[in-house]
Image (tube, rainbow, N blue to C red; front, top):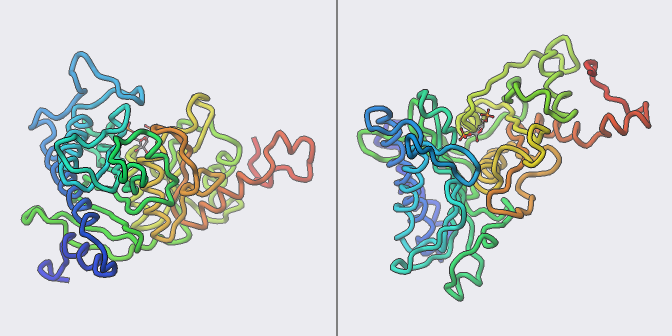
Length: 364
Ligand code: AFP
């Protein structure tokens, strides 16, 4: 399709809005403010060392975020860009971010709106200084009626909504091209930034993930911490044609979840960052509200599946703002297989019931 014929993000949103005659345009304006923030982050990321953007925030006095992780300069810059682009529009009652301890109430000098915006402003920070693709992840929820009616300040509890209640989710991928991948509940659409126009143009309509795959992504350096079902799944992938899967697999690990998610959307695959025993105080590495849920909505809307390994991700009831969780997503049949392995009796139970012993040919 010639570039001139490709709808812009604005045109796409207006055409989607026509399905809802009572729509006020608030939602569309919010998505466009988010898209503007992503364009500004893309610009900062593209300058890299030229823009004094690399390295840790606070330079010699490195700052640590609520996650206990060293903040990169671009983490803080990206968070500020998101706040400044979205606080003034009158569409939000509040925001929450990986980079902020608590929720961000809309300043009194701006009107308060009916949505909540939750985001990881820059995911994959460990890749910034080595010029590997990174991304932004965002999720839109409805503010509780009590916030809208009373106009009260948001509190953390207002954000603790299951992923199935998201009204929109998406990510920006800062790679060879800058892309915005978005779902508003009617499928998954990809927009590529036209650097000459400064506009996101529709390039991928109704993305569908292949139900099967021969590609898995996991950080194999954690294998000694994995639970048995994950060990079994990975062992069977590694066994390839010679094992129970009777086909060879390929492995990938970029350490930027947005890049992995995009590859899986484009050609299938499965991503695992499971709950493991590496740090018993953490229920997983990834965060539920602004990583697992938005990526989960994208995956489910594209015909894939997102799971904790034991249950559907979008059904999980959050208990805290920065809650961590085990995450498996991608090709539906592969994620369901991993869930089946988690549902089978664990080895401890097997000792009592040898009949239920692991069927894998590769027991430890
Ligand atoms: P950072 O933003 O701290 O680099 O974490 C990125 C991430 O949350 C996710 O995008 C990656 O898939 C995962 O962590 C990489 O984790 P490992 O560094 O343990 O492989």
